[in-house]
Image (cartoon, rainbow, N blue to C red; front, side):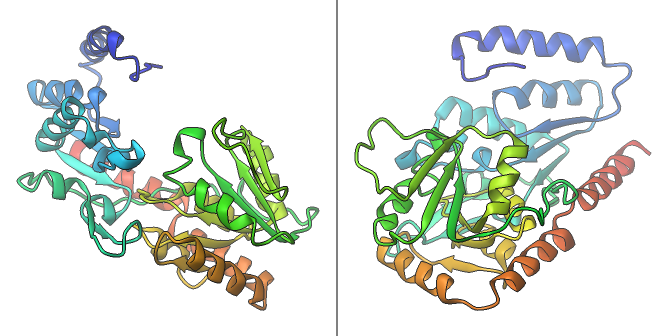
Length: 318
């Protein structure tokens, strides 16, 4: 696997990628690229030269620029140009949610609208696109009846580099107000610059899928407090395990949550405090968990995604 973050190796990676494409040109009927970036331009150019259709799946960071949290491929000028040229000359773009095309967020600042999505940054691009939602394996992510839900427990999932992007600081601040609750953070250890934490915060570090599933089954609520979120796979995973979702009012998160959970309108610790108290008071928590699972199965199953992708491929290769 290429480590594209190592910029000094970028020319070598691109040459190797071109060699791979040339070697497999005769047997290739379609090229599908996951995310726009340095890695997407050569496949697009190659596809044009050899009349091979190229689809680019848009996942999130390739449609965003949030320099204040160091997120988004489009905040870097060279990488932004790679994305622009890739998107312009691809045969079709496949965003995982409509919000990656164009969205307006006021979650981070109620006074300013944050415009994101590739059409905001590249308004002249006319490449066809089709939204194909991510798909979840609901046979894996499911309620384990041998694990009992822990009352007043919350889980969030993100890496150390996503700490601010996913609202880790907000969770740490609000946890002090709820000593009767437990707040689990999966995916990272305690950040070195966080020296004082409430005793009800638990940094779990990296968890493999089986370990993570056990924590989803253990926890009653799931936080998805992102400033920007292309889709929300961990949100869906948790909902499949009957976690009641609490999410930020950005991108596609409210549509995923629907009637199953609660939406934080602005990135404010007092508003989050109120929302948590509302969530803790809500009745029929078990029923909400079941609604959450059914919603994900109905709308974001892996079978639905597979069928849509196969249909698109067959249209181009027939």
